[in-house]
Image 1 (cartoon, rainbow, N blue to C red):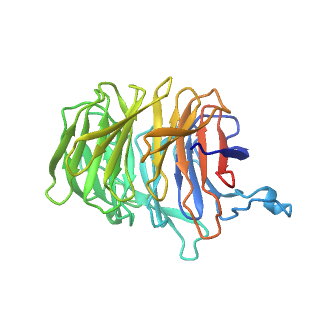
Image 2 (tube, rainbow, N blue to C red):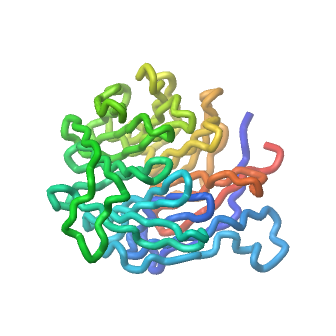
Length: 337
């Protein structure tokens, strides 16, 4: 059984147009990291199906712009599942932590993550936050995975105090292209330039599994909501699904004609969203192990695809895509599919 998703809105996020490299949704906002020096934050609270007013015609208004926080642009942004903390990594090596105000309307800087050796270049590529935003995992240029305590970040006025690193996972030295933290806090996963995939046990701080199956760069790794599976994808043009307990590969999803750049699970873990270098977004049914929807509105690379968190007011699931050209495209599930 196939599903149908309708493109409801498009937004030109960056002026002049720059690639959007990363998206990070919260229950109320959407962080957008791009080649621009500023991070844009959109409101996602106006989830309407039929526009009855002028305001309803723009359900994702720009809520805030964090001006000139990454001089060379931001290649990754991420957010905590509780929606209270976000992080951004810039091409200049800076790694910043953001927190939402008590009234939930605006974001401000908590501080910068300062590596213990004070060298920023190459220390932070892919990033991921824990469910409560207390811990941040960052993959490095030489394959290490650093896990930091975000409550110990340095203020802008004091960038000499190193952020507390609570763990460092060593791999075989290949560039860390992707990283994720499981929602239960038990595991860290990383994907690398040489095709390696690792799962680490956060309690013992030891390697739990070295996973096989992808021999080319792994550009995305993502734990399922229940932490039962890890999805991984990249230049091999397939999505590999692993059992996190046994480390066994349990499924392969093939169908992309080019590199898979981004992955995201829906809230229930039933569906897996992926975005490709060829501009196609696909949705896979995990149970049926088949593609149930393909969006082909764009021929430009999709650097990032994300489901928007499902709320009580949202009747249909919604996802957003972004990439080359600097445009955000929002899709919602058609009623009855």
